[in-house]
Image: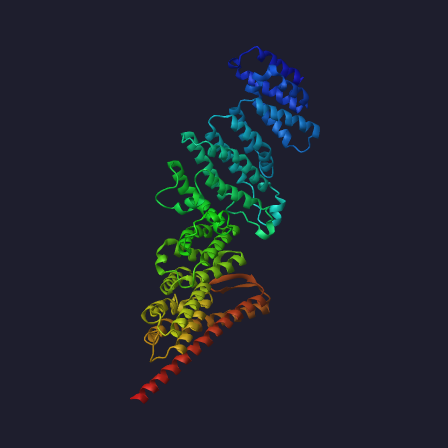
Length: 594
C-alpha cells in the first residue's frame, strides 16, 4: 500500500516542473517514503530512487528520507541484507539530493543522539557530510557550521583517562577524533592549493582556525597521553594533536607565531570576531598548545633554538596559571608538568626578583598552595609541594624573600606557613655560613620578615591546635637563631628584637597554652564522665564541634590535642632556656671585659 501511494505521488509530480512542486507534495512524499521504510519495502524504494525519470523529484524531495534511512542504519538489529540496501539508498540520496537541504538534514541527524550513539552517528555521517560540502559553492560557511556542530557533539563525550580506557574507547571519542581529521584534511589542502587572497578563503581560514582552537580545548586540554614507550605510534590523542598543530601551520598560522603572540595587543589574526573569540575562549586552548609542544614535544622542532630558558618560563607561566585554576585532575597535572619542564631548564638562584612583578609569577605559587591544601588527590598535593620548592630554589635571594612574605600573608594554612618558615630557616643558615652575609636574610630585612613569623595572629586567643604546625616551625626557627647567632655578633638582628619577640610571641603563647590545656583537660573530664554513663556527646576541637562519637574515640582525640600542647610547651621551654643561657653568658663576658 505504501509503495502504491509513493508511486502515485511520483506519477503526479513527474508531469510538473520542479518550480511547481507544492508544500503538500513534499509532505505526502515524505510520509509515503517513510512508510515504505517502516514496512520493509526497501527494494522497491531503491528502484524508485534509481529510476532516471524520478531524478528531479528525488533531487528536491529525497532529502526528507535521509533521516529515516540513517535511523535504520544506526539500529544494530537489522539484517545484513537489509543494511546493504539501506546503504545503497543512503548513498544515492547523498549523490542525487539538493546539497543545501542535505547539509542541514545531516547536521540535524548528528545533533540528535546522546551517549554512545553520538560517536556512531558521527562515524556514519562524516563521509557523506564531506561529500555534500564539496558540492557547495559557499564552503566556508558550510564547513564552519559542520565543524561547530561536530565539535559540540564530541564535547559531550567523556574523555578516556587511563591507557585501558583509551584502548577500549567505549564512547568512540578516539575513533571520532581520527575520523574528524580525515574529514577536515581535504578542506585544509584546498585552502593550501588555492593561493587567491579572496574573502571566501579568508573566511575558510578563520573557520578552520576556530576549529583547531576548539579542538585544543576539547578534548586535548583534558586528554591523557600514553607514555611514548607504551604507545607504539598508536596514541589517538597524540595523533589528533599532531594533526591539529599541523593544520595551524598549513593554513598560515604556525604555532610558534600563535603562542608567542598570544596575549599581546597586536593580534595574530585580522577579524574582529576572532579577537573577541580569543579574549573569551582561547586561554585554555593556548595553555593546551603550550603543554603539547613543551611537555609532549609535538612539533617542538619548529621552535627557534635561540629562545632562552627564562624567556620560555616567562611565556609559559601564564599558561600554567590557567591549568592550575581548573579542578580536573588531568588538567592540574598538566600544569604541574609544564611548570616542572620550564623550571628544570633554569639554574638555581638565577630567577631575578623583578620577575615577581609579573602577575603570573605570584599567582602560580599561590595556585600551587591551593592545590596543596584543597586538592583531594594526594599525588597532586605532593607534586605541587615539590614544584613550589623547585620554584623557590630558582629565585634569587630577594625573590625568595618577596615570595615568602607574599605566601605568609596569603596562604591562611598552618602547614603551608610551616613549610615557608622552614625555607626561611634554610636561607638564614646558608647566609650565616657565607663569608659575605645575604642582606635579605640577616639584619633589618630579616627582622621585618620575622615579624610575620614570630607572632600569634590573635594573641593568646589564637587556636593553638589549628596553628600547631606554624607555631612549632616558628619555635624551631627561633631556637635555631638563638643557638647560631651570638648576642655580641647579632648578625640576624634577633637580640635587638628579643623584647618584642617575647611580648608578641612567647608570652601570649604561654598564656594560650595554659588556657588550651585547661579547656582540653576539662573536656577529658566530661568525656570520662560520659563514658561512665554510656552516653554519646559532642566536643569542641580546634574551634569546631566534633559530632557525636563514642567516648573512647573522644578521649583519643582529646589526649592527642594535649600531647600537641605538651610538645609545643617543651620546645618553648627549651627556647627560653637557651635565651637565658645565651644572655647570661654574654653578660658575664661583657663584665669580664670591663
